[in-house]
Structures are given as structure tokens and as C-alpha cells.
Length: 456
Image (cartoon, rainbow, N blue to C red; front, side, top):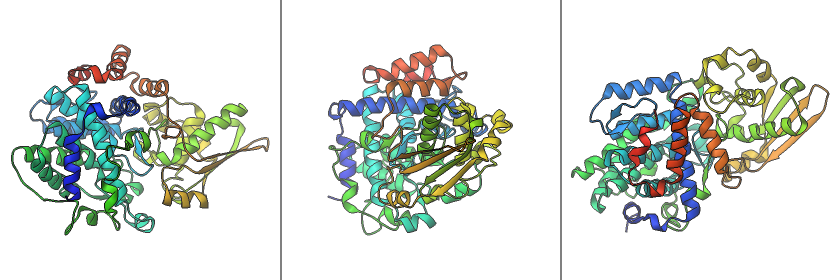
């Protein structure tokens, strides 16, 4: 049996009853977190633009745009809401390599509302998508040398595609065609291009990935046919995005290892994942030594080489898209104690005189062991942070994993605190409380459209 067919059969065969309790708990945290990310991201200029774009496209009123309430086709809503999740740099991270998860959650919720599906169906679809997309990422992840030059991605469409195939109940042949059309036509971007010119399209064009993926599944359901055996020879998918491929990885330990628990990280802070370990270390040193920002003369962050050059060392960001990558920007927000979520990127922050004052103290340098570790096992956050005070004292902290990683998971309380901070002032406290309770009991919810009464 081909790799493509094995995966399509796996998607069709997954059942909620087979998902371990630990994975269900993690899934609910994941879904709540992404709802908060979408709501928080809606207040930025880029969020307002993507919402307006979705509304202008219009169409069948199937699924709700977050923080707005307008209903549009599921393929549009899922993409708009996914891109909102990216707005504040607080989305999940897969093995510190990419961010495929927001699209899975938002597509599952969009179809859940469209077809009035249960919480168990949504949970199962998201879990299945994370396992399949993760294995495709692992199998096709480029070599270190190739990645430094060309880092092509269209993995963002894998998750929405799997979710749509699962929730539409496609049979084997329909699933094969959907997989072919979804992956074969998915936009491919060299993500390096997004780093150096600040752009509203943070990370990837999720609105385009979701649109292609969802409509590939809808077309296949109607009998439309497309590329077949897309993952397999003689013209396999991997050749369009990478210089390497591992055939065994696509299906290894399916139904045995659940990547939602072993490979997914949450972001505690609104910044690039690669800066998170440094933020954690800075906050811990400042807390334990009772340091104020004015007590600090210099902060040096030692990490892998990808984060030790422009734009990661930028001390003059002028807008959110410019600031996403900046380690000094993230450290300054954390040191100055600004709330998690929109406060890190609001207009007021870019006119805050304390921000550049602290950013000028921050340096980023390459740590050789971090480079080696990142090439071999990107999930490891090997870093060293040094803080020098105005009194001449030096404090240092090393990390191997970061808060939010599977090895150092955030608690329910921390996930809820992040959600509350993200949504403050955007939806009412009463709705926030109800959202938390609905998602906590998602496996018992018979119609997930109840969630959408609370997101605007």
C-alpha cells in the first residue's frame, strides 16, 4: 500500500475513544489557546485587514470570523481565523520548527460550526491532523545546509486538509484525491523572505493554505479528481519543498505516539519561539535577584546561529511585523512587565521611551552547542543568558528546554491566565469565563457552534 493511501486510511479510521486521556487534556488546552490567539490577534492592524478581506469575499454564511461575528464560507473563515492566531506571535510550535497547529484548530471549529459537529469530532480531527502533519514535516524537513538557503514550506496546509477530509467523512478514493489536490496545489513559500522585509503575512499565508486545503476536500467530496499518490514516487510531494525525504517517518508509530503530547509547545510570551528560553531566563533572574530594568547594564543571549543576526538583533523595530523577530523587543517587554498579548504590540508601545532604552542593552551571540543541537533536535532550546548589573555583578542561566515545551509544560492555570490576558478588553469577562468552561468540557459538547456565540 502506498504511503499516501496508508495515511488516508489512517485519517478515516481514527476514533475519539482511542485518544489517550493525556492527549485529550492537551488538545483542549491547545484549542483554548488558539481561540485566545485569534481573539487577541484581531486588534492589530494586520488582523483588521484580514477580517475585512474575509468579509469582502463574502459567500455562504457558514462559519464565524472571530472578534467580528460575520459568517462566511468555512474555507475563508478557517484561513482568516488562522492568520489572526499568528498576529501576536503566540501560536503553538511544532518541535521548534514550524507552526502548523492554528490551521487545524480553526478549520475544525469552522467545520464544526458549519455542520454542527460535536466536541468529540473536533477533538478527534485536530488530534489526527497533528499526528499526520507532524510526520509529513519530519519526513520532509530540509537538511541544515539547505534550510539556511531555501526553507520552503507549505506544511501550513497539511493540518486543514486532514481536518477537512476527516470531518467531511471522505471515503478512501475521495481522500486520495483531496490529498493530491490539497498538497499539490498548496502555496509554497521560502520563509526566509518573510524575515527581512516586515510584512503583514507573518510566517506564511495561512489564509491561502486553508482555502486550498478546505476546497480540495470539498471538491473531492463532489467527485472532482486531482493529483494521485501525492506523497509517493514517481513524482512525490517532498521534491517541491525539500532536499531530503524519509519514507518510514510518514507512518511510523501512527496510533501509538501522539504528537500533541510529545512534539507541541505552547508559547508563554508573544515572540518568536527561539527567543522564549531567553525571556524565561531573564524573568527568572530578575525575579530571584530582585532586579529592576534600571539595575541592568547588559543582557547577552547566546543561542543557535539563526537567531543571532538580523532581524533577530534589531533594536529599532517600528511596527509589529518588524518587532516579531526582535529579541531585544521581546526582552524589553518582559523586563518592563507588560501584559501578555496585545500590549506587546499596540501603537503605544512603539512610542514608549523605556523600550529603546532597554533594547540597547541586549546583545545576541551564537552558541556553538546550540547550533549543533538545533540541527539535530530542534525541540531542544539550548541557550545561555547572561545579565550584567550596574553594580558589576553577572548572573547566568542555561536552558535545555523552555517553558511550554512538552518537557516543561504549562499548567491549566497558566494556559487560562494567558487566554484571559489575550482576550482582555476584546470580549467580555463573562464570555471569557463561558469560553473557558465550554472548552474544558469540550468532549461533552454536542454542538460546537455554541462556542461561536462567545468569540465577539
